[in-house]
Structures are given as structure tokens and as C-alpha cells.
Image (cartoon, rainbow, N blue to C red; front, side):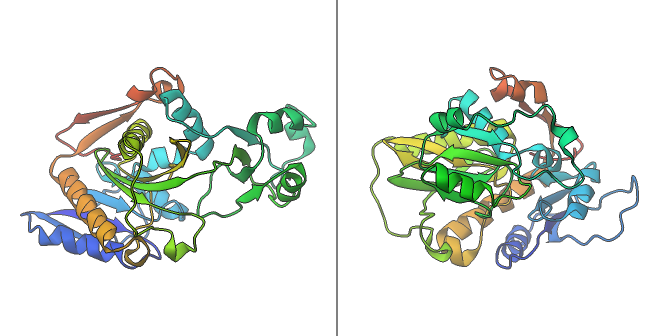
Length: 326
């Protein structure tokens, strides 16, 4: 019996619905369940053919367990998720021809614990703030280079507001990014690097109201370009489950946030239609990986080299499962 495991944290609606949908397919020899894991023996076998990971980004024990699970298809690949960050994403997107706002990486305002001034003697001091501000321009967002949930994100309209916000960032590595004056905003689910669901979204609304339910008309070709760019990003990054956000200014969709390998799929916040779509697509992806494992090779040189970025991830069909699926 092959088992598909769902590893999750605080969320309540999606994990159970996913297990129920997979089991309702009644495929001989394949069953879904919640993952159960305790102490993990070195080189011990993982009992799951597939694991859908919804929480390891927050729990180092789970992340280490998934990286150890050789022979298991993990959605998403734990090695890539551990190596990724938002600034790298922006640089890669620019090389791929996807529009992104102007962004600058900034060093920590405070030195990390146990780091002294002698450890940062290669760091320019003071930074050329005038050049940075001239490149990014205000208004802008100051946000962590590797974070989520709108934590430690500051909207700054001028230098004074920037420095006041920067002083609050502790030992976080930050980015300063041009604010997009958007007319439309989309959040896209991308599953299996093939399926895209484009949803109208408004990050200015209260959290529970951000998914826009009212029907809207968009300029011709806009939604198609959003779909294309979302697929381009996920295929290059190797994510089989992701959400991608675009802010549209002057008809141009700017990729704002596309490192969300554990996207929000709460039934109440996303709405019944999007919830049902996600449950169905992820269930079918997990079942496909249990039936036909995919061996994944991440070609780091290709991803980092610019021209070869789109060929950075290679999939080959394999008779045996490999560690990671995406």
C-alpha cells in the first residue's frame, strides 16, 4: 500500500479536505492520511510515497525530516525551499523577462547575535543612501528579504520615514522596493507547474476580505500575461505548489511576491470555488506523483547564470521515487 501523507500546522480546512478527496478517488493501493512522525533514525526508510508539506518552513524538525526522506516525493522540494529567498526570486524574475519593481538588498541595521564589527569589515560604511534612493525612488516598501505574512513590512514615503522604519528592523536583512501604484492586483494559485487559477485580490483590505468576489473586466490580454508569467516563475523556481502575486500599473503586471510554497488555502478566506479548485488540483497532483514518481534535478548553475535559467530544473520520469518533487 502506497501512502500519501499531509504534513500541516495550524490550518484546519485544507488538510482534511485534501485527504478526503484523495481517498474518494478509490485508487487501488494508494491511501492518504495525516503524517505521523516521531524520532527519526538515521538512514531510516520513510513510509510515505508522497508528502504534501504545509508547515516545514516554520518547523526545522519537519524540514530536516523531509530532506532525509529519500525515495519520497515531497511537494514542494525541501532542498529548494530551504535555499530560496525573495531577493534571489526578484533577480531571477528579471533575468526571465518578468516585470519586477526596482529592488535593493540592504544589510542588517543591527548586527546579528555574536557578530562583531570585525566580521563586517567588507561592508561599505556608510552606504550610499542617495544612490539607493535615486534607484528605487519613493514611495517604497521596506521588507525582509526572506519572510511572509506581511511581518516587518513598512510603507515609506520619504527618507525620514525610511530611516525611522529601518531603525525598527533589528537584525533582519531587508530590501527596499519601489511601491507599485496598482489599479489591479492578482493572486494566482499554481499547481504542478501547469494549472493556474487567477484570483482578484486587494492587499489593502482586511485579511478576511482580500479575495475580491465581485466580477470585474480587465484589459485584453492582461490575465493571459499574468498566467504566463506565473508559470514562467514557478517552472524556473521548481515549485509544484505556489502562489504568485502581481500588482498592475500602466497595464504592466509586476511580480510582487512569488515565494509562497505554502499558500493560504483557507476555505473561509479564499472562498468556496477557489478552495474546491485547489483541493482538486493538489489531490490529482499528489496522486499522479504516487503513481508515476518524478526525479528532479536542480541545476543551480543554470538558475544563477541568467541565460540558462529557464532550463534550471529538469524533470525525468523515474521508476523509483526521488527526494523532492519540486
